[in-house]
Image (cartoon, rainbow, N blue to C red; front, side):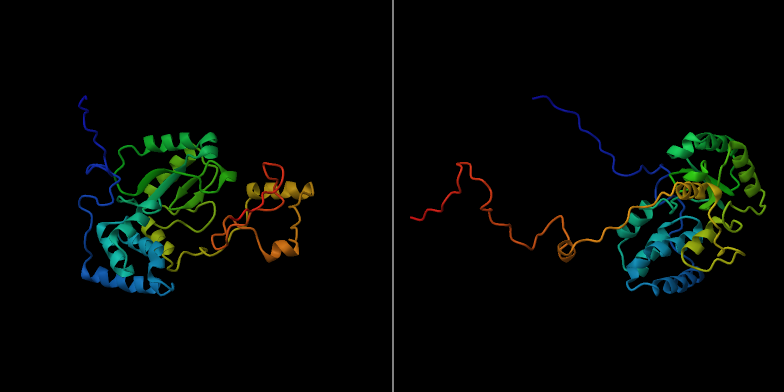
Length: 282
């Protein structure tokens, strides 16, 4: 019998990998004044929910607003506040891509490279910005590629702090990041003037958005309404909703009925011998 070499199976990231939740030098505790402020804000958030643990999503946004990403101190604070384990908090923090695991600039620029945006030029935009920002270390802009954000009718799309910039090109995207780095006010295609990543995170935690016009809901754009207009011109309608009959309404079908006994064999099912078998008792 031959001796086999052992197989090394890696579990999780190596210490030098950037995807670590716990980064070297990351904050592990909060100063007393910061802790008191966070506790007050967290209490406001938790009070909105019948169970404290239900507040984990906005609490993580609140903590991300403090440092620009989630630190070990944030995980510990959330765990203590919501009576969860660190593993439970980290599972949520690492599942959702909106939570950052490394320091993030004032403006998080995301280029959609999913199917339609990629076909329309998303990959070219991302490559152009990678080259344009090469060597930039001033902390104003963090670049990433993102998956579909449901604006396919305006592809290719760039998002800054999750606000939409439609119908982008490599040239317009370069101009956009230059404006951001210069500190000039920038307004997305829909919505109010951009605020910083940390300010955005606090808004996502459920606190008021102080920007003028932030609550004004814009109307749908031309590209979004095009399909609706064609449907009306062609008198296209959704199928009429059929009313269920009384029997179906009384007992809706289910995939499983664990509380019901299995049905007895039916007398209508033909027997292999041609006639129904009769039970014979000794």
